Length: 127
Length: 374
Image (cartoon, rainbow over all chains, first blue to last red; front, side, top):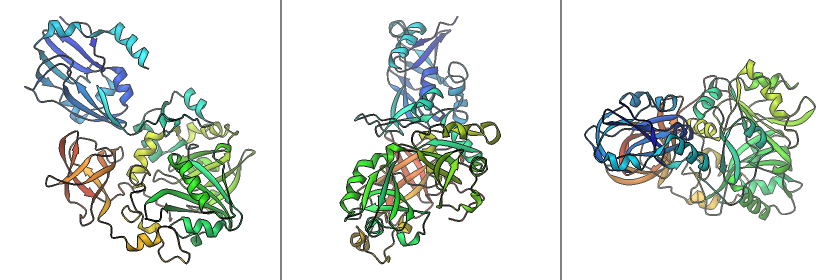
């Protein structure tokens, strides 16, 4: 069973599927960054706290840190992005996913994230 | 996600718009504040616009650049003391690229001077330096007249291999006769304009000067979108295009603490010209300890302005410009290194605290095929 998408203020998204959190950046984020040309992915096995930098994306416009939306251990990264980082632009919620995390403190942290409706209102305000 | 650094630095002092602002907005351009100017960063996307300029033709609004008219005696003599390059190289209707230096050899700005007559020039300066340049030039003009005509003129750049074919549809002048760095007075429909075969992209192309009220010129150029593939192009593509072409950007690659001898502008310093020029003494005696070179990052990261350059773990310089090269599909840029460093040497670049492998290269990453004589 998979949950609905949740978002951070820093524009990461997260989806829980069978106890694993899939993570990426929002459509708004990829749009703001413009053409993404490279990504530095975390290593599987790496452990991050919520809010820690776990990846970096470079676009022709800017370089941006991607923060871990929840704490946990990286169990898989999207290796396909190394050759095709533009997948983040083309399909931010699907083939452009970045990493899968095994959450260590999900109940508490998941609650702090925004629903799609709330996130849409939030980007409406910062636009 | 948080953006650590972006290619456009934000300035919030004042905000100005070019005559084409409403057009940019209506085209859905992403607007950024560039040294106080609300300018289009991109329309369809930096990569797409970049590739289109390399293959077809792009239309850039560069009306933010400063334009000065210098007229009357002794314009030639005064301008000749300001520029490091030699104005004697110019006949009427020709243009010259040159730095302007302080007494200590530091660069005030890099400009293009268009000779309209022996004592009549149009000088185009960087948007970020408009007021500084105006002051500096006016200090050295004696009885010649200096006027800032930026606000009453518009400036569009039409750049790319199909620029000439497109413009030929609109002007009667035979464009084959207009060589690079030459200018011609012409008309687009009934609109008077000055056409110059110059640009900042490494492609063949033109820059078009006209009365700022004649914004319909934009649509006259865009009407050929289907035939020639002309697309509006923003500052983002302008930056990646000039970087690939090895063209310096004032404020990034050079400034008042840089001399033209440290960056690849030695060819613009005419130490043997007849007239004295400001900065000459300092430049003759200078022994640069550093130089600007190109680099390629061998790992998949983009280096940006300010990143440290190291050799064997020791800091030796810094990145002045860096981005992804859409043509070469590589991470490229310019950086300062000690003068003795040659091409193809290993360096490291510190990006966000981590060191990435890179190597030094020439500054010209891209050279167009049927390169015209300059």
